[in-house]
Image (tube, rainbow, N blue to C red; front, top):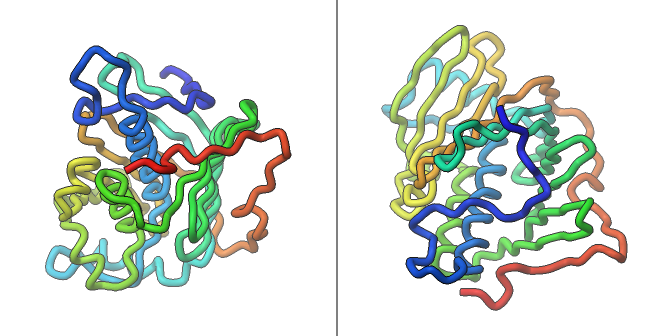
Length: 259
């Protein structure tokens, strides 16, 4: 496997978001695809509400869902693998994440961290320590168009009750191999499916711990996170989700004044 070059903030854009002309690709489209990848980070630490998938729920899946009700914090090491159609070998990177109920997280890619993604209630920040650069993405829902659709997918990762969960996803399949259950989910929203038509979740049938998530994007690329060394409900410092930046950091808002 090829080692992922984390510091580069430019991501491959699906054909649907690319400019049809020979001119440089749209900055707006680039930032939209960047947000889609950030969405995948959040979905990568999925924390289900104590709900069920109605008639689609099998006993094993229901048992796993019910086991999530007491999770307040969750930390883990991970290996992230991205498969792109344009590359013959997948890209891999390792890192660590912290999650706190209901929707705060911190992802660090690389050791020492080369990319840090932090989400709190109002915004998401992507920090590149070596580049002394930070990008701020508001989560106030006031934007329109593709940005609004991406935000809807972002929020879909954290259903608050059974009705929300049932309205957002349908179960496509469930398989058990080597004591790991893998569930394939499809967003019901057409806008969400245009960005991410399928999400897969793997969990242990022994202790019901989350083992992996795999995001399938519309351009045929995938992003998989395999988790190890999980720790539940340990005390997390508030500073984890509010990192202080030195005065020499350049802070930008890529989507400011963008539709």
